[in-house]
Image 1 (cartoon, helix red, strand yellow):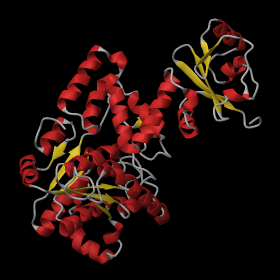
Image 2 (image 1 turned 90 degrees about the vertical axis):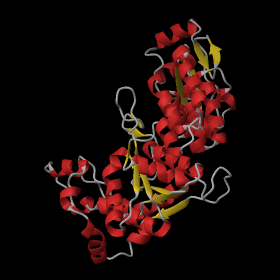
Image 3 (image 1 turned 180 degrees about the vertical axis):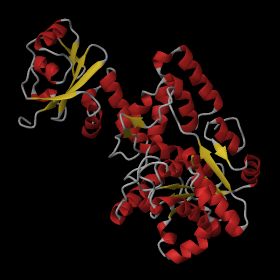
Image 4 (image 1 turned 180 degrees about the horizontal axis):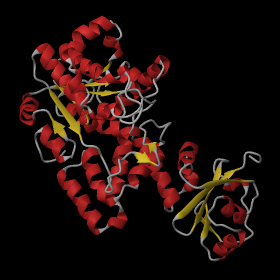
Amino acid sequence: MSQTTHILDELQWRGSVAQTTDEAALREALAAGPMTAYCGFDPSAPSLHFGNFVQLVVLRRLQRAGHRVICLVGGSTGLIGDPRPTSERVLKTKEEAAANVARIKELVRPFLDFDGTDPACEHPAILVDNLDWTAPMSALDFLRDIGKHFRVNQMIRKEAVSARLESQEGISYTEFSYQLLQALDYLHLYREHGCTLQTGGSDQWGNLTAGVDLIHKAEGASVHALTTPLLTDASGQKFGKSEGNAIWLSADMTSPYAFYQYFLNVEDASVISLLKVFTDLGEDEIAQLERQVAEEPFRRAAQRELAAAVTTLVHGAEATAAVQAASEAIFGKGDVRGLDLPTLRDAFAELPSGDVALGASVVDALVATGLVDSRNAARRVLGEGGVSVNNAKVSDPDAVLGESDFLHGYAVLLRRGRKAQAAARLSPSTA
């Protein structure tokens, strides 16, 4: 933890606060505690992603500061979809949404203490699905009890809604009603659990304040909202995107190895801010890492700390140890033969690759994997001693790949020079 004592100070120092409805009142309520806070996660995909990770860590910090937290999975709101500024969402089927809800419920469990066994947490977290209270509500009840509190002229000011209204496509009533459904969630959790704080990303501000307003109108009570900033790199590009692909928290969508490498490769200009957001390192520890970034950036000490911490949080210590060993084996001088097959596959999936036959020459393998562009170039780098097979130097231009070279009968690690690696996979026809 940092040297600050108030959880709001902690969140602000870590760069995890963009907006609050009333900072002074929220600070007082958190200090009087325990408060009950919630964050919702819609099942728009079979996994949560980088952006959701920020919210899970905020809930985790609140719980460990002695507050009660509720993790909401949007079985109903996921059927509608939060309006995008550009186009209408393709609606999930009820079966797709239900399957995603089930996966996300399991995915969030390692982040929070739901069973009261963590001594760092005073109150167990609660896991809810908003379909449980939305599905039984009739359309008439929804319109009379919830819709009457909303004014359309205020609803259309929401950025995504106004952008769609100005487009040729417009916006359907289905997506337009999304903010009413999210506001209903806050009202329900206020009534059932005494929830008085909702958190979310800064792009959710309109939905969060809709819930605050609904509770004020329906119950005459004042509650709070807090948003986190959108995380961007030094160029302003949103984190969590790599060539259009999200960084997922599920291992079957982004492997632990790829997840670890993503954070290991974070730029120097961003690594300290990410350490504050995602790790429990204190001010002195992060200051030391910041000095190392400035004085010895080539050691990438901050990136290694970040990658290890977040991979352990998401995938566990055992998976982290496995991917660290794989990273050292592939990019350093570790024992590549000691890697298990699943980790090896995940690691090799991130490298340039090509298929080769059993008994193929190293020359042909270098060409097939794209490490060189011709057989003559391959012979030249072999003769110069710049090639290794499974981290063992090879200089014989007539060397071939035998059965023992294919790790787990799957692939060979080739290296050209110090930094260029590739995976030569055993061709299925000769496997």
